[in-house]
Length: 372
Image (cartoon, rainbow, N blue to C red; front, side, top):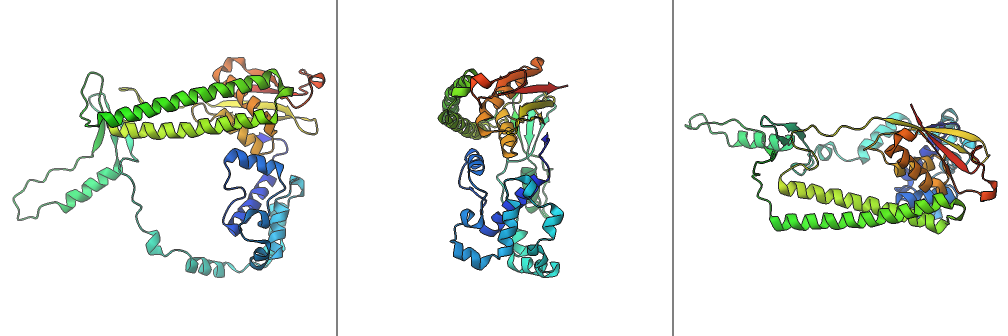
């Protein structure tokens, strides 16, 4: 994302958060969901050793120096202008007292896992990786490289000795066939298990449909009466979004299980290539800052890969958008994605009384443009 006022000082904040995570073993607000983390970060003072970890304050004084705590405090200042630059940070007392690199290397190697344990091969589920390719008969096949390697190993182990009169056949790559129209499948899937999965998927889709309708109603209310959109309504919208995303993940997992049960790869039409990603869309959001100055926020959107809600969350995380505007901004991003011919949308933000709104000057309004 590109915007006036968003520079490398954001990386200094990230460095401070990383330092806290290394010291305490957990990131600030790690036990909360992502949307809650954003709200707490904006509402609360910057995190510290005392507020981030599980140990009490006296324990942290024993384990971590004052110079370390002061360094973290400098990096996590609200005002980006007050945060040190990378050059200034290197001159900090904490880094001046750091040990030589040779000492650090030896200490890390000594305390880390052994090379033998690191070299252990991870057991993966067969069929979890591979590629989709077209067969000679016009169908589609899923080739699993891991299954191929395993078959090669078994073939070498079971290969007869030279004095045995046996015919050695070549090893073929096991594939999961997707039958073409009009042909029968060789799958031996359990019909009852398949039926149960299909039923669960249908139930999840029905729940998602109801939740999306409820969220659309809240979005419409905010657009029609922005000044009356309450904090409780906003929290309800966020909760609905989190539930929709959770159900999406459950649905994808069940669909994958169903595809494995059928012995097929879902969602690819037979005798056609996999769907291509839509063209990149470039947006520019014009909005006023807290100092009442207009600024342009430029970002890209890839249909089929990005989502309006995720982009709105990124804007909030970068300090470019107020939390209460996330719903209406996401809704208008979706509108332009679904109908790019509109090119431009002007919409109310709901951050001031109706008597003070001026659409032409974008006072209480924002403008979203689709850049050519």
